[in-house]
Image (cartoon, rainbow over all chains, first blue to last red; front, side, top):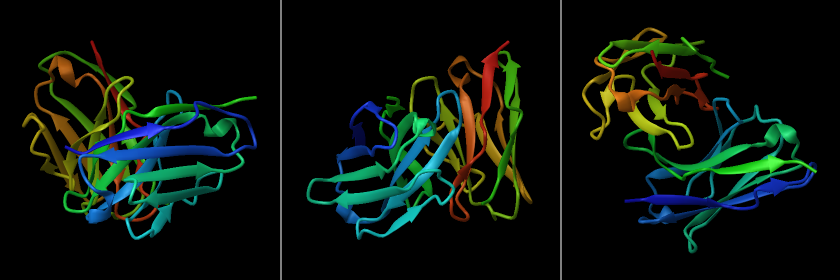
Length: 120
Length: 107
């Protein structure tokens, strides 16, 4: 059973960089067959896809996001990461990491989510 | 971006009721649509992919259908554990986009 767990600071100051890591267990992110994804949910709101990365390093991002983002992958550590630059209050959200499985075309495994608040 | 318009945004229903939720895509997405269930404070869970295919762990009271750009999630007989928020997701084109959600509450 694949498990994902987000980690990172819960509070970030405006204009700084938000950095989160997702640690994957129960399966190797280097095996292919999946995209490793970040999704966020503003308080009391719906879900927003941020982007995802393949084990080769290929990335797809949502161009509609208000702040620039970067997703990176560390296959030896079985982790992938999210950076959101120059954050504003609009980046306050619960951030989820999730696996997009090619064969079922679905987000099949999710982390529990981590709340990141942008505030001075 | 492909816009997914989900309706209603909320509904009240009783245990045993049949419930229907709709998502309309702003353009054709073939059947590249999934449905997810989210309970308060938890991550979403998958229900349906390819518009009408049920994941193996999902009870058969859930079903999905498609007609052009309109997609429907139905729950044939609402159970207490089904009270949650439901989201559609289109994966036909980037960026992936979710519907706004439908909160199913107890009447």
